[in-house]
Length: 390
Image (cartoon, rainbow, N blue to C red):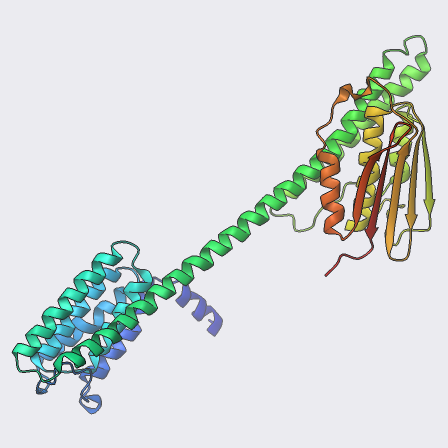
């Protein structure tokens, strides 16, 4: 059994001409039914004549083209205007005269090209009609003709306003969609930077260290195993990140290492970099257990990850201190190094990581700073509220 909702959906999806047809049919019937026949639009005050066979043709010419008012607005207006002129010149004065302002409104709303030409031609045609009616003995006078013209101009102007409003709304939606797309691309690029930079930096540092361990097979084996483990983690994180591009995946995947701050620090230590890690308080989420976490905990993790990546680049082998403090309303993170090594900057850096972190933390209502220490090294501090601002 077809439900009313399905009928409505089918009607909305049908051709526009079919959807626009009922109104002109009803208007034509109302103009021709004797019981409903009353003087309609009367321009020029000519004597009204009774309906006959020619009147039926004129009513059809006035009303039926309205079914094309959205698909062929200029042609619809031309036919309706011609029918209206015959209606007034022959003195039928039917209710079908309503079709003219409707056609004008539709033309103003849906006509895409030659709008100025249509307006000029239509105004000239109206002048000719007024002159013809005057020659037939019209007592309308200049004021009456001008008043009726202004009514028609209002109908045209209303259509133009509707078209402009529709165009403005479409442009607004396009702008919102474009902004959303750019924001999503930026977010994915930021995540990609965080994942790739961290893992690849660790692998490069480990590989460089392996060059000097040929005389220590055990340490060389451990270093190569760490490189292999880092590579596998990089692949896993990248797979999760690529899931963000899957339009069929409604949930936002979180890398398996997102909540493992201890595991992150341990990997850096295995790369040969000394790290002191301290946690004060306990997280609300699962940042310490490797489970699903929220945006606040993810941001804290990314801050630590980026700072340790920079420590590998610029202060490899120099003690780095990581402090994560969980308070009632926020998470505070501080990462500092005791100094930096000249020549360690050969890994390079674009500054995109810290810029992305500032944006991420800022969107959550927090603050992030990165400064050089007077005695060498750097310190990164972040304050991330537990709840995003409204």
